Length: 346
Image (cartoon, rainbow, N blue to C red; front, side):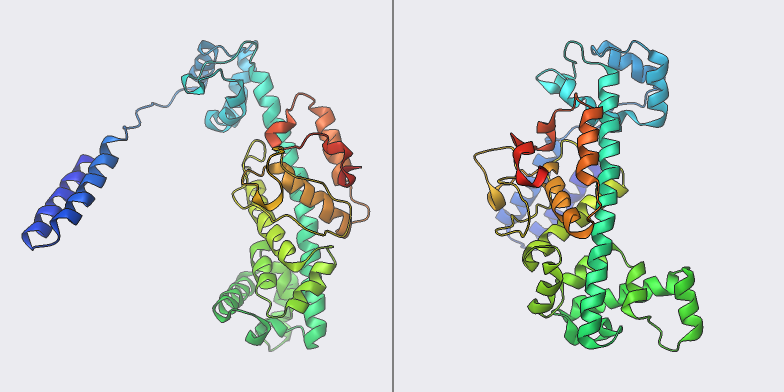
């Protein structure tokens, strides 16, 4: 905390004390801010040129036989972004930032390339699943209400505030859309919002997930989740996780070596080939596991792709990716031991 803020807090304390405000409480607040201030240090690292970054890595023991290539990589992929991929190459304690013997720039860069290709594969799979969910929601709800405008009826949803919020998002999307099929609709018809089979095509995955989660009827949710071979509570959880993973992919963040911050629930009776566990810690199983990694997501995608696309190549593409990058340690992705023997992957 900046010293001026500490002084400001102290001045506030004196004022409160003078007005008779509880002394003990105010003093505890001041001590809290003071301790926070002294426990942190000022960030003082200065920016380095690309050549200086290469020199720094070499000084820490990284093997860089072709400095020109390394510098070219760093000109296009930031040092900070790449640092996550050479983190496993550091000796203990890692805070000293000294590389292990034979740690190379190429090894870190290949890991980066693996992660990039994995993101693309995951992103394409989520795209197909999102489209399938959209299709199922539109189909079942439009037939139930015999209208494509069912989503404008608040009775179709559990939470009225969430219904209003989603309706506003749809309205905003329609207003801002430049899609020809939306513009054509607005020129021809007097209803402001198009039917679901048009308006839902321009909403986000998060909005789509929110619509499904907020449907008022459990029967409706189950009719949709049946298509995916799951109970609706599991499908809701999995879609929540996939929205989060989709955003990771869209922003080019890491899938490799992360712990999921939005963990999916374990399905008790999935209708299709599945796995005995999706974490690489045999002491924790199913929903009680607090350290699920990317493998859990890959299990979800492999399962759902089997439901939405009989011609999918997701599993084959994943196998080919591991063949292309044999040096990748699958434990960093959370793969369980003997995963290839699981029914899902056979």
